[in-house]
Length: 319
Image (cartoon, rainbow, N blue to C red; front, side, top):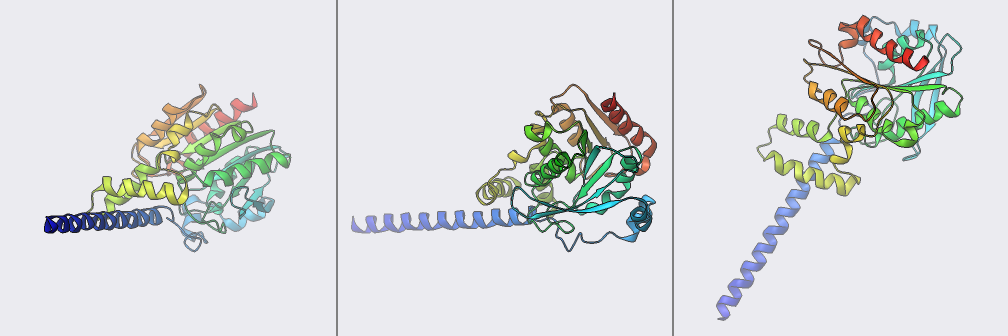
């Protein structure tokens, strides 16, 4: 009997130790997933814009700066207290209409300048700013729009407070599209907005991370990595992958919205823009899909139609 009791104790202790080892190892794996998926870029990565970028978009940075009045911004963040670096670029026309531009992952506020020029020529002031961990924005963690939305909301509030908000809209591209959706879905911000433009928007944090894990081919089951990544994300950062789902957020958006995407996009596949479009709560919405452009290249490949679609939305607001 004593031997059986001893064996049971040994077995029990062994099971407990193995359980702790499993849980500890799993938590560690979840931490690796979180750390790898929420710091996708750094300030160092995104501090400069290459000459090839300006050539690709047919714009001279120096000419742009000499043409428009540009006011540097340092907006205090209401979320974490960091500074949101940006530029307020005034339209040549005296205007109280403003659009806030939100760059994608790997970009910074200057990579919005080609699109900014279009809005400036059409009577809109432009606020373009650095997202978290990009350019000069020192806030850490990239969260697929969930934390990023607060910086965007602060930029919208700034435009309103400075008397530049007769009409305020948001244009967001790719990762910035996710930020735009989640900010616009917040009632206090949406009340100050007149339109929303989403260019190849990210719709799902979960899908993007799962795809990243799949490409890494770790040899571990994806479901295991995603479960522990999601759990640790909730523990460490306070939100789950589902909380950052843009299709759910879009249900609360009722302002006129233009969604732009491509059937050939391999970064944010066609279904992402379509899912957001289908989820939008408002009746005034449009999905414009091209068949052939790579990720966010519609501005280059179909520029005339792109501008016509945006102008149609802006003119609708002017009526």
